[in-house]
Structures are given as C-alpha cells and as structure tokens.
Image (cartoon, rainbow, N blue to C red; front, top):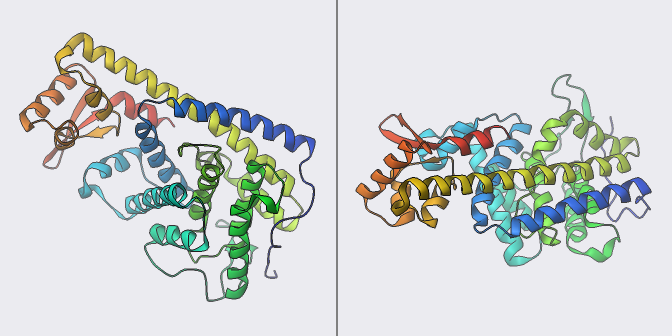
Length: 356
C-alpha cells in the first residue's frame, strides 16, 4: 500500500445533498435543545464534571484502555487508587479541561494548542512525527489500512492548513456540523502524532462545537457513539480515503451528534430529577441539615469522603461526620471502608452513570 496524503482543505466540492441537509437539520434541532437545557442548570459544573469523567473513560476505552466507573470515581478523591490505566483516563480529563480553557480564553485553536493538548494526554513533548514508519493496521488481522503522511514537512503543512480551516469560517460555506465531520476525518488521516491521535481528535470535536457557539458548555461527546458503532466508525473513516465515502462519513457523524445529544438530554433530566428527589428527602427528614451547598456536594461525584464535605461546606470535622452518618441513615449514601479510609457512595447517582 502506498502512503496516503490527504488533500488540503477546503474540499471544494458540493457535498450537502438532501440527505445530508435533512440529517443536519435534525442534529441541530436536538443540539439546540441540549444547549438550552444545559444552560438552564443552576450548577453546570455538576453535569460537566460527570460527563467529562464519562468521556475520559469512553474515549480511552476506544484505545483499549479499559477502566470501571468504580475505579475512576475512587481515583477522583484519593490518589491511592491510581494505576496506569486510571492515570491515562485522568490525563484525558486534564487535556479536555485544558482545551476548554484554550477555547474560552483564546477563541481559536492553533497548531501549538493541539500539540499542548496531546502532550498532556501522552505526558511527553514528542510533538508531530519526525520519523517514518507509522502505519495503521487492523488490530485483529494485522492488515494495513492506511499509511499516513510520512514526511515531517507534509505533516506540518497539512496541520497548518487544518487549523486554518478550523478557525476561518470563510474558507468553506458548509454547515458547522458538516465541517466538524470533515475536520475529524482530516486530522485522523494526517495522524500527526506517534500516539494519542484518536483521543486528541475527539477532543478537537468538542472544542470546535464550543468555538462555533453550538454549545456554551462542554456537554456533548461522541466517544460513546463510536464505541457502539466502532466497526462502522473505522470502516467509514477509511472509505473517505479510498472509496469517495465522504457523504456516508458525514451522515454517520451527524447521526452521532443527534443520538448523543438526545441521550445527554435524558442524562441531565435524570440528574435533575434525582437532585429534586434527594432534596425533598433531606428537607422532609432533616430540614436543619439541608443546604444548597450540601445538595450540590452530593452530586459532584458519586464517591465522597468526610474531608471533601468539610472543605466544600466549610464545616468542622464532627459536623461533616454527622452529616454523612445521617445521610447514610436516610438511604442516600452508603459507606464503604477501603484500606484505612471510609468512602461514601451516592448509590442512585452511581447507578445512573453506571448504566451510561
């Protein structure tokens, strides 16, 4: 197989067929609904934290870095549970937040920004590939599926062209969701890094949506959709390069946006319902203990511990211990001793995200 060097952007051909236009309308409608519901949340940080952790887990799983919800939630409140896979997931979470900050403060995404995000992911400063030899293979059969650009000069030029396309809306008059699909294909075809290309590409997806004001906060992630349709994802990605399959690829990504936006709307509604249910239980049974800060502290993560409650509520150690004991009696929390520490699990919240 020969080296494949993707054409520079813009693509300069009409791809917005009736089918793509119809799928774009459906995706935008659901995405707008998600944006409205997310913006109405009284504390957006709760949902952002949860979805970022879920995305970090799912995106890493695509690269065969397998972790459980239990391991991830434990690691967020105690470093004693870290292992190499959990650290990979945490690096992804850190890279996501780094990207959010870049878009929020700089409003653009540069080549150096992308390198910084990948560096956080992989914990090295190798930058773009400088040595030839990278090939993409089918992990099961060993068949070579793609030989990405090998010359460092080609990689640098293609990435410079890609960030121009990302930042300059005038280069091509396509809908932003269609452009997101094109951007994702182009990045994965360039495959600019030695490692972390898939995860970096998926971070670029959400950053592009934020940069185009399609969302105000980062709440839509396609990794769960890709896991469910993994074979189709790689097949369609490959067909863009060799079988003129761009339209099918765009339709696949548009369907993913619509599907995941709808699922995320349900997740947010479920969290809101559980918060109201929990609030009512505390007010009815322990009114003097209730506060908005306490309720929110119970929803930042399914796992918590006394020190977190102390710090978040600015209360004494005995008071925090008493609160946790009372919440356990109410059936909201369940305590679990692991090593020398006692953790408290918000069981209904844990079950809600475990099923995602």
